[in-house]
Image 1: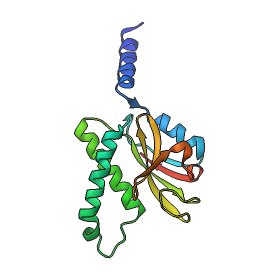
Image 2: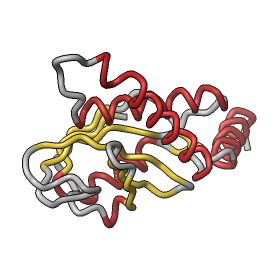
Image 3: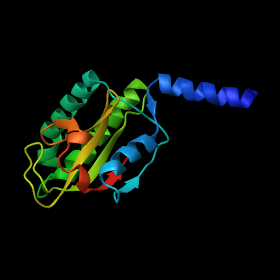
Image 4: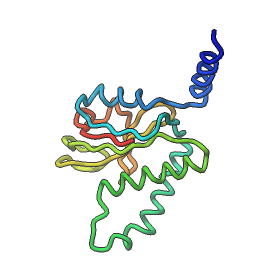
Length: 162
């Protein structure tokens, strides 16, 4: 094996051993259910978050909402996209503190079926997150979570932002 090929192989093996995941895998998983979803990717690899860290993120997000959302958005509703993007930001913060890049994106869906105590109807924003190697959908208003394969609106994802 040539030296450059050996180095590349070692990098791939090392990144896999550290839990790094290609965004291509995530895109394929989403496209399996929503072929026409618009996908925006901003990083070349992601890490899976563990359940313990996810609980810490939820607690931090809940505290941020309690503390800042009511007063910061006077006269403006703190709606689904605000919840989804602030949750994504909180995951990014926890990633930074651990020297990782946890995969957490925002998905936009046609909310045909109720999920996570949010009624059906209209458009909705949620999070998609890699938890212990499994892609899951998280409702950031209630923190209900389910595997993408069981998410009732998986075929109605219109956009994914990673």
